[in-house]
Image (cartoon, rainbow, N blue to C red; front, side):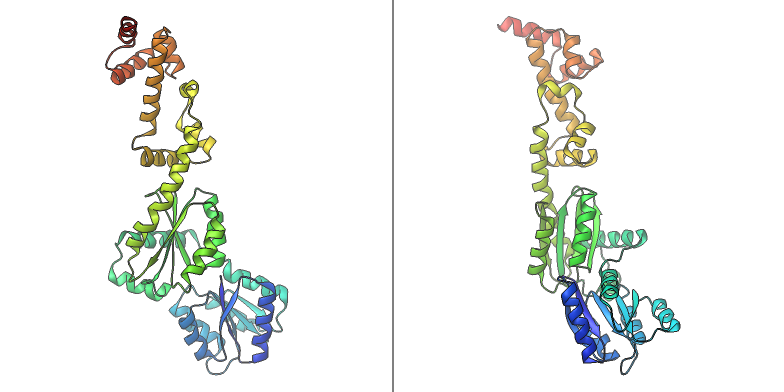
Length: 359
């Protein structure tokens, strides 16, 4: 659930904002409030809210100075300035330091809705997404050097503790799920990796309520296989090993059941990895990877084995070798004979003769 901090020296203004938020955003929680700039900076790093609504004219340091200090400590902080002053210079200064927006008092419902959605609905550039993916891959492989770990702790917050979430899902469904999850856990980082199928891995730092977060995400992903593992002491590699393989195995088993239902002997000649992948709604690469993980052999080798079993039964029935080759999907009879000899230790003709003698 997204969390918010309200910074304003007037109690009535804070009350009005809380009321507007509670009436219009069921899933947004105000976790803390501050009355001056110093308190705002202190409480931000204590609670790590997902968004901040910051007044400019507050005691001590101004809202702009407090926002700058917060962004220096956490460049990913999402801040919206709220002020009674419609001053271009103030707006320009606010946007220059990296805030997400600027709204005027008294706050109107529509303006608040737009700005809060902007706080929790931001997008990353491709470069940021690639960097985040690389960081997570290093964390999950145990290759995170101490200097980089210290930098990431300053940037993300406490990465020594968190929650690993593994969701096994193909694109574009994976992108849709990540968008939904992001609304409930904005400080979630993602990476796609091919090590265990099309697996979406995620880390959250810090985890305020891991059990509640897990329950919310389970409702979002519904029937999509997923697994969770807590992280303590920065051991993301262990959490990855614990959570990462579980959904891939479960989803892979279901995929194999669906695949078996499509492989009939009378269709073996026309089957291909590409056509089956289309029928199953997955990519050919994912189907190939899942098949090898689940069955311990390549898909092509499996289909060839099935075709040679069918070929033996057809040879037994007296069909010519050329016709058997065609029905098994081979236009080159010589190549078919080579595969048949490799599978059965003899040519199709010899196999038929042996069958006749045994009868």
